[in-house]
Image 1 (cartoon, helix red, strand yellow):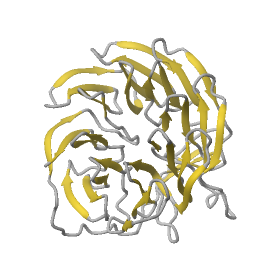
Image 2: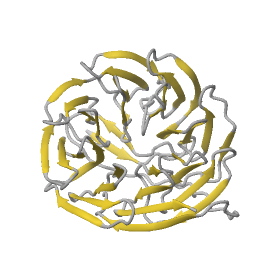
Image 3: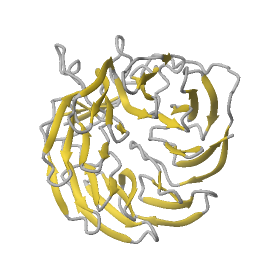
Length: 386
């Protein structure tokens, strides 16, 4: 069975987007937080976030869809199967196709492909040039995180604990890696990070692994979290959301666990700190950023893990994954479609910009001098810093 609930604040109400994976059938329930989200505070902006264009691709439904870019165009998808390619500079629509299936994850862009996944476990690849079908591959279960393609391969995961590597030209499976899931897991899964010689994957139960690109064998495995507690709910300790890497370190965060950075070759910890996060991490030259499950945003010095600041004025606003922006800011979206820019040096508010009023559940995409955002209602927004 699969139960879904909303994770609420820790001591009073403890659920937020949890999928309790048992076996057999499924149904859904929803517990709404009684905690009032923080009111938006007034501040003097230090930078302006200007909308350059917007478009629409279709609602996400219960899924979180993220846009992606190849540097020239933007690609986005919605639950009903629409996939669109837009000019990055102007937002002009270049092509729009219908995948003909209900989608549950996407998009990933790489190797001339646009990649999306379905709730039936089908990975679909389309040619980025014209949207023509390239291939499809059947995975073992629902796909909830964006696939990733580069250097001749595509990495994808299904929500039954399996990670796959496929050939980007044909869709043929090169290898798969599987592990047993705990009795209860988060609905929010860990995203894959595709490196030059390994696929980095965070897992339910708090593990982070490096899987050899050539055969999927684990090169190392570390604990980002150690499950503990008297109940299965208290022992949920999953690596969730995006990982982040810089060629030397790979960094991750876990619910009811820790945040930390690890050497990509050996897996040795550069540092770890107690922290409970649902939406992963972001990184720039100096800091690693994450928001805890109560909505407090924190920065950690990348090499040592010291914590120079925390920003607690966005508590319970159901924040998106953080995004490092232009080496000066960290951006987060919230449940009202607001984008919040914080100064990377001290966490102070730098700018705020509304979108269409619907939640930003997806991963926002940083640009050289701006940001790409997709909302739950299917709005695609491009912003520039000014």
